[in-house]
Amino acid sequence: MSTETPQSQRRDRSGLPELGATGSSPDTPKPLDLAATAHSTSFATLTRHSGPAANIVDFCIPCNPYFPTPTIFAQLAADLPKVLKYYPSDSSLTTKKLASILGLNPQTVAMANGSTELITWIDHLLVRDSLAIPIPTFGRWTDQPLETGKRVDMFPLQEEDGFALDLDEYAQFIRRRGSRVAVVCNPNNPDGGYLHKEEVVRFLDELADLDLIVVDESFIDFVDVEPEGSVAAEAAIRPNVIVLKSLGKNFGLHGIRFGYMVANPALTATVARALPRWNVNALAETVVHMVEDHWDDYEHSLRLLGRDRDQMRSQLESIRGLTVYPSTANFVMVKVPTGWSGTGLRDHLMTHHGVFVRECGNKLGMTSDFLRLVVRPADDVARLIAGLQDYQHSQRTARAA
Image (cartoon, rainbow, N blue to C red; front, side, top):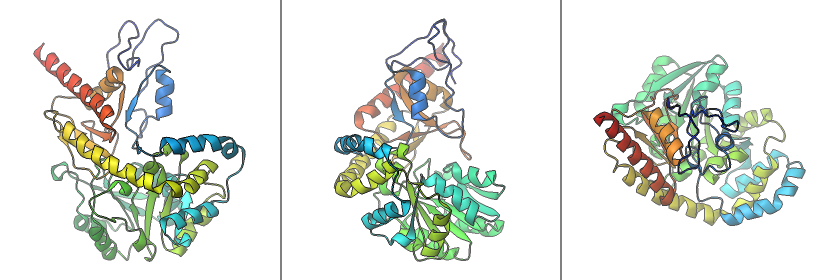
């Protein structure tokens, strides 16, 4: 949070009140703490707090900016009265439709109200006592088993190695700790590091005696370094492997909450039996039935995003002292230059430029020196770069004073 407390509420180009600002107007919002929870402030909370005049550019929530297309949104809007009024189909029917689109055996697929629901049930049903996880990574993989009293064996990724995961070292760590479940996020969040399919399959072979291995592929659709990086087909035939996918992240529809898992039929049935009967909502069902007709649009969106990722990394590298990490996902991780404050930069970007970023200080294995920046179109990136340059100038001015 910014420590500045001006006498009156000020608004900048973004139309946003300063974070932590106070004033005499009864309409002045209370300060919004962007680090109040272990996860990002929701965009809905942010916009409600900032008011209708706010023009926020979201570099925090890892959405696909090119999908759904305007045509799809218009079609969804037209269907909305029917979608909201009536019950969805049984989730097994929606699962069969999704499996047919993806070319998977429906008996190997279970859909849920977001991949987080699946993480919760995997923990309750399949994690007996211990789980190994590299950190930093997606927070629910550490938080969920800790909340249910499991031992979480955290394998720290090293900054000097660029936070790259060495699967051989990780396997040795799992053996030393005696972990019974292992998790790999590929690509990893927040750094976007990627493990080639051949490496992951070798890891599955090495640890075939574990109770369970989960490969979280929530962002793998954004990977373009090899034609097919998913190990979902392996999961469908192995006794102890689950692959997780997030349709919300891929399709740019986080608010709908829908994800799925792939595993052998027996393992899939174990999880599916625990899921509520109508756990996949009607809006998610509608999107699943629509997406088949728009698959070319979806694949085009991935190509556009890959182009934007390369351009964005290049522009970020122009900021002196900013460390930009390689990424195969739809986000880029950076480390702020020495002397900068990650939280100060986060608040400056939000207050003065209406740019919402993910500061990673509350992620295990990270500090507030690291930011995760979602890949966005060029016009939005120009606004981000302007904000970074503005903060850089303010730091130079402060040092010179």
